[in-house]
Image 1: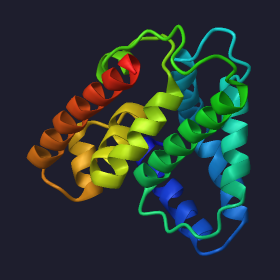
Image 2: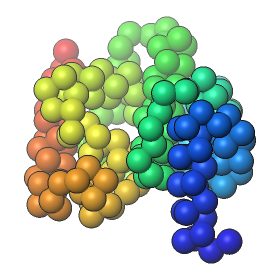
Image 3: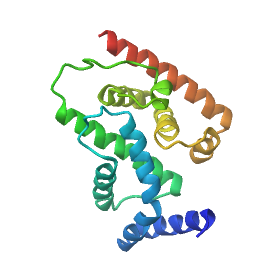
Length: 191
Protein backbone atom coordinates (compact mmCIF):
# COMPACT_ATOMS: atom_id res chain seq x y z
CA UNK A 1 0.00 0.00 0.00
CA UNK A 2 1.15 3.52 -0.66
CA UNK A 3 0.82 6.26 1.99
CA UNK A 4 -2.39 7.56 0.43
CA UNK A 5 -3.97 4.10 0.51
CA UNK A 6 -2.73 3.62 4.08
CA UNK A 7 -4.31 6.91 5.17
CA UNK A 8 -7.60 5.95 3.50
CA UNK A 9 -7.56 2.50 5.10
CA UNK A 10 -6.76 3.98 8.53
CA UNK A 11 -9.65 6.42 8.18
CA UNK A 12 -11.98 3.59 7.08
CA UNK A 13 -11.00 1.47 10.09
CA UNK A 14 -11.33 4.41 12.49
CA UNK A 15 -14.86 5.01 11.15
CA UNK A 16 -15.72 1.32 11.55
CA UNK A 17 -14.32 1.28 15.08
CA UNK A 18 -16.27 4.44 15.93
CA UNK A 19 -19.40 2.69 14.67
CA UNK A 20 -18.84 -0.05 17.23
CA UNK A 21 -17.05 -2.67 15.13
CA UNK A 22 -14.50 -4.12 17.56
CA UNK A 23 -12.63 -6.00 14.80
CA UNK A 24 -11.58 -2.65 13.31
CA UNK A 25 -9.13 -1.91 16.14
CA UNK A 26 -7.39 -5.25 15.58
CA UNK A 27 -7.02 -4.47 11.87
CA UNK A 28 -5.99 -0.87 12.59
CA UNK A 29 -3.14 -1.60 14.99
CA UNK A 30 -0.75 -3.21 12.46
CA UNK A 31 -1.22 -0.18 10.18
CA UNK A 32 -0.41 2.35 12.91
CA UNK A 33 2.03 0.32 15.02
CA UNK A 34 5.20 1.81 13.51
CA UNK A 35 3.99 5.39 14.05
CA UNK A 36 2.86 4.59 17.60
CA UNK A 37 6.26 3.07 18.37
CA UNK A 38 7.92 6.21 16.98
CA UNK A 39 5.78 8.36 19.30
CA UNK A 40 6.57 6.09 22.25
CA UNK A 41 10.29 6.15 21.46
CA UNK A 42 10.23 9.98 21.34
CA UNK A 43 8.55 10.07 24.73
CA UNK A 44 11.00 7.59 26.21
CA UNK A 45 14.01 9.61 24.99
CA UNK A 46 12.99 12.26 27.53
CA UNK A 47 12.77 9.80 30.40
CA UNK A 48 15.53 8.88 32.80
CA UNK A 49 17.74 5.98 31.59
CA UNK A 50 16.54 3.75 34.43
CA UNK A 51 12.87 4.15 33.47
CA UNK A 52 11.08 0.83 33.80
CA UNK A 53 8.76 1.27 30.82
CA UNK A 54 10.03 0.50 27.33
CA UNK A 55 8.48 1.96 24.14
CA UNK A 56 6.83 -1.39 23.32
CA UNK A 57 5.31 -1.56 26.80
CA UNK A 58 4.03 2.00 26.38
CA UNK A 59 2.35 1.06 23.07
CA UNK A 60 0.90 -2.06 24.70
CA UNK A 61 -0.53 0.01 27.56
CA UNK A 62 -2.00 2.41 24.99
CA UNK A 63 -3.62 -0.54 23.19
CA UNK A 64 -5.20 -1.72 26.44
CA UNK A 65 -6.68 1.74 26.97
CA UNK A 66 -7.88 1.91 23.37
CA UNK A 67 -9.64 -1.45 23.66
CA UNK A 68 -11.83 0.01 26.39
CA UNK A 69 -12.87 3.02 24.27
CA UNK A 70 -16.31 2.77 22.73
CA UNK A 71 -17.34 6.41 22.63
CA UNK A 72 -14.90 7.88 20.13
CA UNK A 73 -15.86 9.61 16.94
CA UNK A 74 -12.54 9.79 15.15
CA UNK A 75 -12.30 12.75 12.78
CA UNK A 76 -9.30 11.34 10.95
CA UNK A 77 -5.93 9.72 11.50
CA UNK A 78 -4.44 12.96 12.91
CA UNK A 79 -7.16 12.94 15.58
CA UNK A 80 -6.31 9.31 16.41
CA UNK A 81 -2.58 10.03 16.70
CA UNK A 82 -3.20 13.16 18.78
CA UNK A 83 -5.39 11.13 21.15
CA UNK A 84 -2.76 8.38 21.25
CA UNK A 85 0.03 10.83 22.06
CA UNK A 86 -2.02 12.43 24.83
CA UNK A 87 -2.85 9.00 26.24
CA UNK A 88 0.84 8.01 26.18
CA UNK A 89 1.69 11.18 28.08
CA UNK A 90 -0.95 10.32 30.68
CA UNK A 91 0.39 6.77 30.99
CA UNK A 92 3.89 8.10 31.65
CA UNK A 93 2.60 10.67 34.14
CA UNK A 94 0.61 8.00 35.96
CA UNK A 95 3.71 5.81 36.00
CA UNK A 96 5.86 8.68 37.30
CA UNK A 97 3.36 9.50 40.04
CA UNK A 98 3.32 5.87 41.09
CA UNK A 99 7.10 5.60 41.20
CA UNK A 100 7.96 9.01 42.60
CA UNK A 101 9.72 8.84 45.93
CA UNK A 102 11.76 12.01 46.03
CA UNK A 103 10.67 15.59 46.54
CA UNK A 104 8.99 17.22 43.51
CA UNK A 105 11.55 18.52 41.06
CA UNK A 106 14.50 17.05 42.93
CA UNK A 107 17.43 16.83 40.54
CA UNK A 108 15.45 17.90 37.48
CA UNK A 109 17.12 20.19 34.97
CA UNK A 110 14.58 22.73 33.70
CA UNK A 111 14.39 23.86 30.07
CA UNK A 112 11.85 25.71 27.98
CA UNK A 113 9.33 23.24 26.55
CA UNK A 114 10.37 23.62 22.92
CA UNK A 115 14.02 23.03 23.81
CA UNK A 116 13.19 20.10 26.06
CA UNK A 117 11.12 18.45 23.34
CA UNK A 118 14.09 18.61 20.96
CA UNK A 119 16.60 17.13 23.39
CA UNK A 120 16.84 13.55 24.62
CA UNK A 121 16.92 14.31 28.33
CA UNK A 122 14.81 13.83 31.38
CA UNK A 123 11.75 16.05 31.81
CA UNK A 124 9.60 16.34 34.90
CA UNK A 125 6.47 14.96 33.27
CA UNK A 126 4.43 15.47 36.42
CA UNK A 127 5.20 19.20 36.52
CA UNK A 128 4.56 19.47 32.78
CA UNK A 129 1.27 17.60 33.10
CA UNK A 130 0.18 19.79 36.02
CA UNK A 131 1.04 22.91 34.04
CA UNK A 132 -0.84 21.64 30.98
CA UNK A 133 -3.91 20.91 33.11
CA UNK A 134 -3.80 24.46 34.48
CA UNK A 135 -3.44 25.89 30.97
CA UNK A 136 -6.22 23.65 29.66
CA UNK A 137 -8.66 25.14 32.17
CA UNK A 138 -7.89 28.58 30.69
CA UNK A 139 -7.04 27.86 27.05
CA UNK A 140 -7.86 24.31 25.97
CA UNK A 141 -7.02 24.95 22.32
CA UNK A 142 -3.48 25.98 23.25
CA UNK A 143 -3.00 22.64 25.02
CA UNK A 144 -4.25 20.81 21.90
CA UNK A 145 -1.69 22.76 19.85
CA UNK A 146 1.10 21.80 22.26
CA UNK A 147 0.06 18.15 22.20
CA UNK A 148 -0.17 18.06 18.43
CA UNK A 149 3.11 19.91 17.90
CA UNK A 150 5.28 18.39 20.62
CA UNK A 151 3.81 14.96 21.19
CA UNK A 152 2.67 13.95 17.70
CA UNK A 153 5.10 15.99 15.62
CA UNK A 154 2.51 17.62 13.38
CA UNK A 155 3.51 20.72 11.47
CA UNK A 156 1.75 24.00 12.22
CA UNK A 157 -0.17 23.90 8.92
CA UNK A 158 -1.49 20.42 9.78
CA UNK A 159 -2.47 21.59 13.25
CA UNK A 160 -4.30 24.60 11.84
CA UNK A 161 -6.25 22.36 9.46
CA UNK A 162 -7.06 19.80 12.15
CA UNK A 163 -8.28 22.48 14.57
CA UNK A 164 -9.99 24.41 11.77
CA UNK A 165 -8.18 27.68 12.53
CA UNK A 166 -5.92 29.87 10.44
CA UNK A 167 -2.19 29.23 10.35
CA UNK A 168 -1.62 32.71 11.83
CA UNK A 169 -3.90 31.89 14.77
CA UNK A 170 -2.19 28.53 15.31
CA UNK A 171 1.26 30.18 15.32
CA UNK A 172 0.11 32.96 17.67
CA UNK A 173 -1.43 30.47 20.12
CA UNK A 174 1.65 28.23 19.93
CA UNK A 175 3.89 31.19 20.84
CA UNK A 176 1.55 32.23 23.66
CA UNK A 177 1.33 28.69 25.06
CA UNK A 178 5.10 28.22 24.99
CA UNK A 179 5.65 31.52 26.81
CA UNK A 180 3.02 30.68 29.43
CA UNK A 181 4.47 27.20 30.01
CA UNK A 182 7.98 28.59 30.29
CA UNK A 183 6.87 31.04 32.99
CA UNK A 184 4.74 28.45 34.78
CA UNK A 185 7.43 25.78 34.88
CA UNK A 186 10.06 28.29 36.02
CA UNK A 187 7.77 29.48 38.84
CA UNK A 188 7.21 25.86 39.91
CA UNK A 189 10.96 25.25 39.89
CA UNK A 190 11.57 28.23 42.16
CA UNK A 191 8.92 26.97 44.37
